[in-house]
Figure (tube, rainbow, N blue to C red):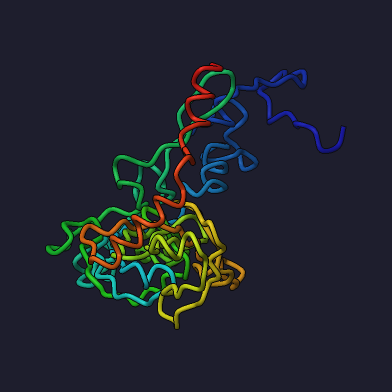
Amino acid sequence: GNGGFRPGPGGPGSTGSFNFDLGDLFGGGAQGGGGGAGGFGGGLGDVFGGLFGRGGATRAQPRRGQDIESEVTLSFTEAVEGATVPLRMSSQAPCKACSGTGDRDGTPRVCPTCVGTGQVSRGGGGGFSLTDPCVECRGRGLIAQNPCETCKGSGRARSARTMQVRIPAGVSDGQRIRLRGKGAPGETGGPAGDLYVVVHVDPHPVFGRKDDNLTVTVPVTLPEAALGGEIKVPTLGGPPVTLKLPPGTPNGRTMRARGKGAVRKDGTRGDLLVTVEVTVPKDLSDPARDALESYREATVGEDPRAELFKAAKGA
């Protein structure tokens, strides 16, 4: 019918039949009646080649920049309050000498292996294919005709720069912070990579850290622990707070000063956990010794270890 394959001109005595060879479609030569003006010329291979870019120029694919990892050491206060620190980073960036083309004249050619895509496919079995970076052009899609002397044709060169980085408040020792788009620049219009900053925090001589709370150990005298009273406690970067010590406070008891801890993600603060440490004087004055002797005489018969022995026998 109309639109079907029409027979070519036959020889004398032709009955209308014709010879058809798939080579006329997929090959380059014309045979039999397929070589006329209505033939496919170079074959469908040329058509497919044009569709998939084999016959024309192909742009190099954009490439994302490398991720960079750096380290920074903060003081205890900087980690709690946040800080802006300078970071000197070294990474691969587009070569300035050749503008990232890798070619001394700035005219690289498209890689014939990957046809400018920077990737090659290989069979993975089961009808699947796997994609790998092209070995010929190292994933760039371009090959330098006259390699740049600075980057040796790679289009990438070592670049050093200093950046001011804001470390958020409340970071902890060993924490890894991701800063999007602060890594190495991309290539051929690709996005920049990310910057990962590993934070190290120097210890503080007075304060410690437990999640969003700060910790501090405060010494108290024996009379303060026994009789109670008010004690002043230092805070990090602020005025001291006053805590009420109940009578009979045991050694190791922890009290809480609310809102005096580290900064949380939502901007609020944790607490300051105050642990009481009852101190025992090494040297006693005569009046102090006499007072303690009087106290011992007044508490004769009281055995603080009685419950201990009772529990030991019960077990």
